Image (cartoon, rainbow, N blue to C red; front, top):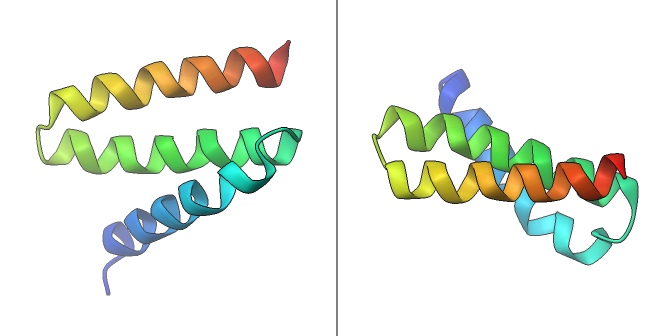
Length: 67
């Protein structure tokens, strides 16, 4: 398994786990990490609608994480 494939699976796993603990800072950080890793995959595949959704999600979770 390549590093890129492993990172894709880690991102997917992070997004699977995050909703159950999203009210915690760790859950929000996990969601941000998962979205960031999956955004890399979406860019590589030129899926611009998913890139846009992921970036909006990252911004939303960051505002809750910081604020």
